[in-house]
Image 1 (tube, rainbow, N blue to C red):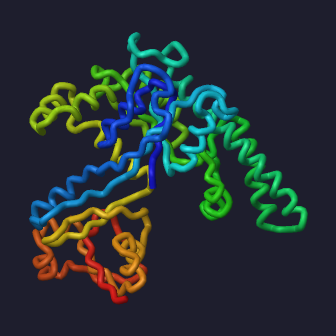
Image 2: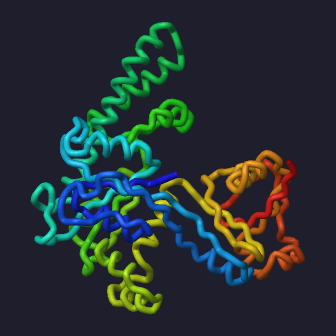
Image 3: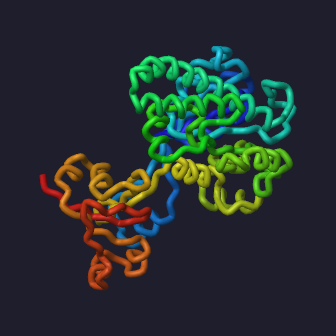
Length: 364
């Protein structure tokens, strides 16, 4: 599961990527600086993991991770191959969620591809290109379906009905994620087609340091423009975040954050929001050798969660011994949780909850 960072050239995508990842994408004051997509595996900040480490005192601690992709900047005409359009669109189609960076700051030393600062125009530029690419995909699919539907195939007829309605939706300048459809039809007919504008999106308003805590007029315009999309909006001073990552000690970073009115780096909030955007959650395993956070989709069953550790765990699943995180912290150890009768023994139908501390029993 991975989230792609997108936006026009020179809005701060690569600088943001550098903040989030140990990989260092080239960052410079000209368009198309990032040509091949850079991929970073980013740790998900989670205070629960630190608390479990404190209680268990393991030999090592491993956090959950999320994959972030920095994708080349897009310009008008990308859907027709302008700039790096075709490459951009192919790269973004492979991601599961979109982090859309919008420039919401003035700086005459950093050029804008369109010559002025207007995050709403920038957003619409990318929206239109993505919608045009989805429109092309819809038309191609309808062309193939028409022959099948003529034979009386009910599923093909139903898919045609949905795609024709989506065609009208796109033609009205709306993204597919806002198209109302029941979950069964969406999973059956839309998900397999991987439409770009059906992916969940988070808008990152890149502001100057003075606006990091409160936002600015550009941010307010963005919030107003995306109000009907059900999308996340995050305010982030990306250049400032880059400065924070260069500081060596916790004390220095804390002092810097206090000065600009923040309680934690905005990049930490972004990673957690991206994790949720991908519909992911965390469960833990906790022992003397290792405390570890494991990533699973929301709604995963106990055997599916076990399979993330090893496929044999899922194949030979017997039961899951589950401690809710709050109980582990309250009683202080697995042994004391058992004494209090708070250890749950769960079977194959159990839906793992975010924060569960789990020990799997299996036999292969």
